[in-house]
Amino acid sequence: MPRLLPAVGLSLLLHAALIVAVGRQDGGDGGSGDSLQAPPLVARLAAVVSDAATAVPVVTESIPPPATELPDTRTATATAASAAREGDGAAGDYYFKASELDRRPFPLTRIEVPAPESDPALAGAVMIRLRISESGRIDDARIMMGTGAREFEEAALREFTRARFHPGYRANVPVRSEMLIEVTLRPDPQRAAQGALPATAGSSTANPQLR
Image (cartoon, rainbow, N blue to C red):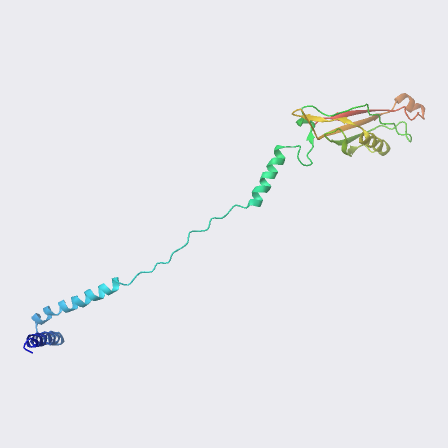
């Protein structure tokens, strides 16, 4: 019991000091001395509020990096295939033009187009495009231009479609090739003036048009 007396006395002194401090703060008109003692209490409260504010964690939103756009593999594949076709003309259905060949195709035998029987004095010309395979066969033959001598044009197309060619070469390799052939019909002027002519009286010449 004697030991508790000092502790009780100290507690009473502290409570008295707090009451005096609060009393001086409420009576703001007590003079300049009272107003000078108020700031320490306010400063301590401010410090406590500041510590509490800094103790609150700050949450920041994490922004993911922008996604990298992947290349379209289908477009890349199509581009590579197109480049391969342009680099290798033998691929697909490409036919080399005469100007792109090291050796141009030519017929294995002479091609003769018979003169039309309906009009011995007929003259005309026809241009035929030939597409020749790497083995020398005609893959396609069609009339590109003519002078209107239909019988003669059809006969010329028929004869060249049946013909066999020595294929064109590129880099010492037989390749598909394309060429234009102009076939001209020239009747004999003297016999044409006399009237009827034999079916073989007319003559035709074939001139390859190089491109």
